[in-house]
Image 1 (cartoon, rainbow, N blue to C red):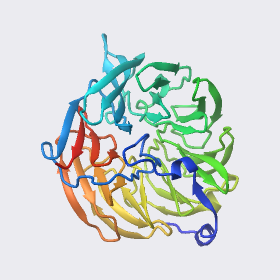
Image 2: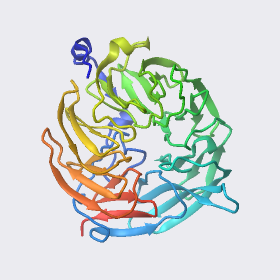
Image 3: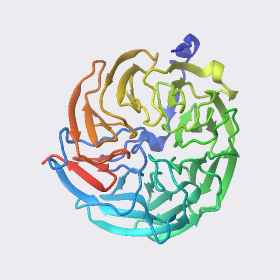
Length: 418
């Protein structure tokens, strides 16, 4: 662990805020993008279940066609997902968007967006891993190098863009975000990684910024986070070798390096004037970075680092003054967000890929074996429940008032107290 006294002293007086759109908590009934209304795993939903099983407190369980690990999003009692189904010869896949009734679980529509000849993905990945965004009557779906599209909420495809070509490694992963009138995402493939913005109304490319670092392995899968620092919007996008901040016009503002870190997956979180992010394989580290400055800020803006218990895949979760970290092994940690001091480290579950969420005063963690663990936040480890549905689960939760949604490899579940 490395702590910069200069940074810890300076961030206390700095002015940092989330963007207005992200800071305003959405209705407890909506979960419109990856990691919810703020993009950081928080929900205002209430009356959520603490205990469930494959049969107990399951309001419905709907079989899903095809395969995919995009997390469910929810707006106005409708759930949106993506999936990939095999068509004809091996490798031919139909990349699709789905809409379900959140109350009944009924599939309302199932629309092909792209037909593609795909290569084999990593065993923990799929051809439909990026999570959609539902916003202002539109659904934005992303299939990595296979293409990006916009649909209306009846399933009509409004535009497509599959002109952005790059060589993927292990399939696709990172989800897009909305930045004003732009749809922004990273394209970190085997070579020539870049960050790109599409016009959200037309799908036309507005800008494309190369991401050049010293990392020998260029591929990564992270989802950006939009923040505002002293009145300036910053798009925070981790990639192989460095986390970079971009202005809404695509200019790189600053970067902090982390050496050879690659296959970076966790989405950053932001609070207390610090960004908390993971640095990827082969030696994962959690870094706390003060956003700001210009050019390379590695030596001046890294407040602390944590290696023991750091995740390769799950994003971190900030609740008050504590940062909660879930390693891929299922070991959970509670860390002082300002200093990096570890309050506790305990095994919470088995191997984990999903990102934890905070809702109704509880922390929810879903492991890969279908076990949902509920923790009480605090400086003392307290496990409230461990709930097995018996189905492989790599996608992250969606939450609404009274219910959680869990995507398994075969079904989508609505978990709700009876």
